[in-house]
Length: 362
Length: 238
Image (cartoon, rainbow over all chains, first blue to last red; front, side, top):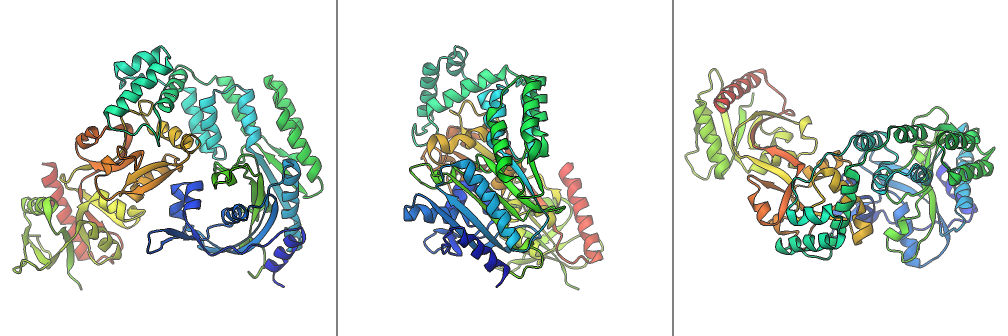
């Protein structure tokens, strides 16, 4: 039995179905969820009709689409097979195995179960000396709220979460007063803006749109433009306090043993006079649920994935001392709605880089 | 030893301007006797062997440079960068020739009074699906330039709608929200209710003499090309 078979059998034994996922996939669901930039990183081809297909770049989206198609509420899935991505000098074709748990209501239990399943599978595949890193966007969001960062900035920072350089860039922008004085605005726009009169402003923008022959619906509406303009005007005179910025940077620098994580959060709370109950409780629960699962477990506050359907906890499993993870996973509660599900379906899972397993013949 | 080959655009203003500029620099383009032939030669470069001139479509020139079929060519920087991904690796944009000016720009509706910079567009794109149920749509034929520029601003939340003509009309027709297109004065954009953000210029393009980095270089060719570049630079900066 090959290691890949072992991995699949191990997952099946935890109650997973193994769906058949085609190698050739419709490209739109991938491009819609991840964005146009993905086009440069996958292999796209076209049907005579013009419909675009791609070589399977990953399994999660096809598994979710199948789940929706079958109309199931709750299910556990396992998969393995080739995936294809343009990766510069690295091989374009590689093997992934993985696990998805869709529809489980108790998020914390499902998260713990997902990590334990990943570690179990790796152990069955003969991997030792594993270390685990956890992150959680929801904890970052709660810190932004507790520090009373304005909503518009919060959105920007959440978007950049997981990319330290970009967070730094945004913090720089927010720390300097935004001097953009509305020099390009016409009088019809400027007057209601200064009066913060949303209704008159919306009417004025609608007037401009009509004059310029822009459709009033189907895209940005006059009201959406007016709201954002007012939001921007409110922020133009504000700047991020130096101590709030220092607190944010201190938070993002947290990189500790999971065992100590809730204590570290508590002293952060005390130092800055804020409350982060969600963070403290979740980190404690994660530690309680996971202790003894891996020798080395860390919580890193800045760890996240820059995909807007990842909303909460993420994790990676490494073989000690190695730069590339063997497993990457996390919670992606927003994905199934993005793919068209009328109701929210909680989802958590992981992908395993089979080619990185030592001495494995895939 | 194969002859040095330089490609000229096969028709239009770009061709006329190129021939004229070379003439000013003292190089005579000897056109084929048969008007339908696409081969000519270049005279007047001191101590150079025979120089072949190939007439190719402006879009084809970049590809031929990368595949190493020609040594140098004259074409728009926008076309070269659009046709060839990571073009710096394969192409040496040796001389800006001072004609064929066109800016590749992002055109956003003037009525988007809240959008003045790429940072604003980033916010709008990120919120687009939550607010309007679909991604921000960009109409363009410049896929590569658009993707590269948006990626450099950290923006991934959009979809490209391919547009092969009258791109500037796409927002009015409801086919797209913003566009990426070339403009020389911006007047067509303005006439269509679009504006250019302060940092929304993707590329200030003009015709370039481009030298292939992929072709095996013979020292005599390198020397000849150096002389040509030098003379052209003198004429352009005059």
